[in-house]
Length: 235
Ligand code: FES
Ligand code: FES
Image 1: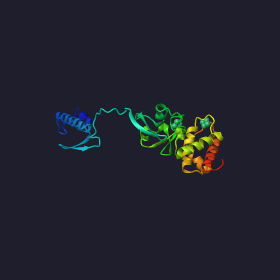
Image 2 (image 1 turned 45 degrees about the vertical axis):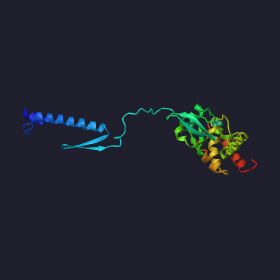
Image 3 (image 1 turned 90 degrees about the vertical axis):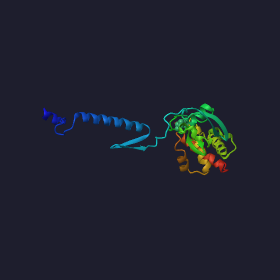
């Protein structure tokens, strides 16, 4: 039997150890582990060596474990839209598109896919086109937002918007028109920077805007016509 015990590693005759000491050691080990785990839970890592315990502070050590602030609460913010400051309630989960359409009634900006695939929700933020369906509304605070309704402003953006919308009518730029506000906003960003774009310039600038009707020829013709109008040509 001693041989069997030895084979199982349970013999104390060979090692001279007392099984009670083993249990005590295990108990001591579990106790030390529990204490260490408690220390880690407080935001540190405990390293034990002999009787000494070293606590290494982690970045979470000073983070309060509880907070009374509701992280999802709506806050009133000011957004600058089409040249006007507008106060509106915004939750952290709100995208700019939701605020424009659902809170402010600016439904010229569309939301065809709501997942950054079509460009139909494009607006300008500081004159750069962005898909508003995935642009957090909070990020737009302090920036200049232009939507397709911005043609009523007195500004360079409005001048381009008006030229484009007139050309769109003349060239039949829209069919079902679901994509058109987004197309026009991307074209506005292009013509603000380049009033004599090549065909490649236009294709590159418009590459994120999908037209399910496939009316790309009409869209390109509209942009070229608007560019000529802005250059003072007879388009
Ligand atoms: S609705 Fe935003 S990309 Fe389609
Ligand atoms: S005109 Fe219908 S999707 Fe572009």
